[in-house]
Length: 419
Ligand code: S3P
Image 1 (tube, rainbow, N blue to C red):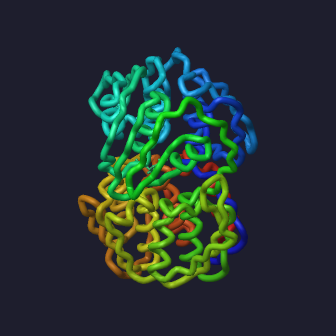
Image 2 (cartoon, rainbow, N blue to C red):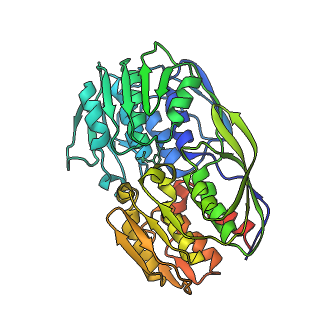
C-alpha cells in the first residue's frame, strides 16, 4: 500500500456550523468562504431558514445577511436537525433569547442523544423548555425570551453545551460564565471575539459579557482536523510514500489524535503554520511508520473525541496495544461508539475488551477480515473504511452513504491518495 499526493480535506464541521449561526445573529453581511457542504451543515442552514434567516445555497464563497441578535422569526414548522447534534444543541442556545416558540426534532439517532445537558442551563437562564416525548430526548419545545445571568459547570466538557450557553448569553443579553475541567474546542469563543463580542477565557473559565450588536464575520473555514485524521491514519499505516494535507485547522483543542500518534512513533510534521480568522492553520506532512503501544486517558479524550474509533482501528491494523479510558461520552454520540467499535473489531478478528468508559486492545498482529456494521454513523464508516483500504478489501463496511454527514467525497479522496 502506497500513499502519495496532496489532499485538501473539506471545511471544518464545527467551524462551519458556527459560521452560519453566528453570521445569522450579526448586524450586516458576513462573508463565508470554504464552508463544508455536507448533510449536517445543510441541517443548520435549513433550520436557520425556518427561523427567517435568508441563508443562500451553500457555495465556496457567499454572503449571509444577519437578522441581528434577536431577529429570528416564529418558525411555521418543526426545526429538523437531521443527524446533527451540533445543530440541535447550538440552535437551542441561539433561540433562547428570541421571543419565539420552536419545536426541535431530529432523526432516529439524534432522538436517542441526551439534550438535558443543554436544556438544563437554558431553563436556569429563563427559557421555557418541555419534552413532549421522553425526558432528555428530542423532540424538545423551547420558548425564548428574557434571560438571566448564569454561571455553569460544564461537567461533560462538551463544546456544544458551552456554545449553547454562550449563544443564549448573546441573544438573551445576559452575562454567562462556563467552567470546564478540561478545555473543550473553543471555535465559538474565537469567532465571537472576531465579531467584536466580549469573551474572556481565564484558565478554564469562559465569560461572555452582553453586547448590543455583533459585527459581521469574514471567514475562510480551514480544513477539518477530524476529517484529516482518516488520511493521517491511512498514511501512517501505509508501506511507503508520503502525504501532504493542506490548510488544516491545527487548534490544539482538536489535535489530540495527532499528538497520541506522534508519541507512539508516527512521522507527522506541521508546515506553513499561520493564523487565519483567529485559528491556527497549517499543512500536515505524514509518512508511514512503525507504531508502539498507546495509552489514552481522560485528559486526552476531549481533544480527540471524534477520533477514538479511528485510533482503535489504527491500533488493530498496526497490531499494537491501546488502552482508552475516560471516554464514556462516546456512548452518547451518533451511535454508542464504544460498543460499536468493540463489536466491529471482534467481527474482524481483533481481541478487544470493552470497558465502561473505553476499551483495551491487546498487542498482536492478526489477519483482519470480515464485514463491519456502521450503524449509519459516519465516523464508524470512515474509521473502518480506512481498514477496508489498508487491508485491500478484506475488511468491508456494510454501507457507505453515511459519510455524507461530514465528508461526502470521502471514498473518492481515499482512493485517490492510497494505492
Ligand atoms: C462538536 C463537539 C463535540 C464533537 C462533535 C462536534 C462541536 O461534541 O463530538 O462532533 O461542534 O461543538 P461535544 O461537544 O458534545 O463533546
